Image (cartoon, rainbow over all chains, first blue to last red; front, side, top):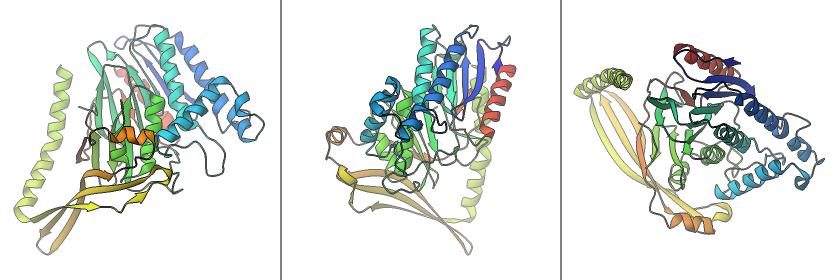
Amino acid sequence: MTVAASAALPGVRRVEQIMGLPLVVDLRDGCTGEVLDELFDWLRWVDATFSTFKDDSEISRINRGELQREDAHPQVRQVLDRCEQLRDETNGYFDMRTPDGSIDPSGLVKGWAVDRAAAILDDAGLHNYAVSAGGDMRVRGRAVPELAWRVGIQHPLDRQHVAAVIESTTDLAIATSGAYTRGEHVWNPHSGRPPVGILSVTIVGAELAIADAYATAAFAMGAELAPHWTARLHGYEAMTILADETVFKTGGFPDD
Amino acid sequence: MRKSITILLTVAALALPIVDATAATKAKAKKIVVTKRFTGSVASVDRWGSLQVTIVVRKTTTITGTKKKVTRRMTAVSVPVYPNHTDRSVFINQNALPILKAEALKAQSANLNMVSGATDTSTGFEQSLQSAIVKALKA
């Protein structure tokens, strides 16, 4: 569904459900939104190629042994390679391997697809936009010329409120992983159980693919490891909310 | 500018009753606050080496008449022993100790364009769609 430009709000907005998620694209440059067709075609291609719910996706074919990884689409190989790098970088807490031995790169695909969607908008000469995939997003520029983008971080225990507000006028990726979110199935790959003592982890930085993978990994680590692990990241800032309602923020977390 | 002032006022108005409530409890209740450091055992992290975590917990015991209420809040986390087995870990360990700010969880309302982490079942889509439309129409 596309919402046409109103008198007061510049640009154009479109929402579609892809990859099982609401994809919200909010363009605030004075544009007609022609670029949206290309952007949503890209997102649908990603879904068709990477979905573990679609029998004819390349990932499903790899999992059934019908397609060798080296014969897969170059972008599939790129994503799978990055999943493995991230597994090493997160001490094994971000892992695309599922307990049944198949692979599910969805944890990286969503953020990666949004990063490339942002690149499509950049190439179209747009400077003020937000692209959100189920609450993980890239924002750039300003919401309106006189106001920054204001992004709330969902309060994990109170759906009517937010736990923090980030104001951004730069290019920023924001990802939150939490137990309350839609079927994220985050478990600790080392113990095989869901993490304990932790409600949510938000990671902020340049790339959504990385922010999202770090958020998933830190959440899987649980209350004891997540705060200090996030404090040692380079170029990414974090907010971790524990079950006892303690909030840990890294030194440069950009909330108000 | 006017918008940000309005938001500040709203937050202040929300915060006031909470402050009053705390002051009222203080008058009647006796509070005992103990801050203690707890160190976990040295754990081996797979092929990554060993790791040990120390946490600081503030325990607040509030006694009102015969009633006793205990709350515990973690105020700091540090890692005296950290894996330095791989190149990556060594690289991480060479950096200064992590800077972490601990605070209590607050609920805020504010004028927002987007919410991170808001997806929830299939209603998330409708909510998101609805809010996008509402915002587009209101703004």
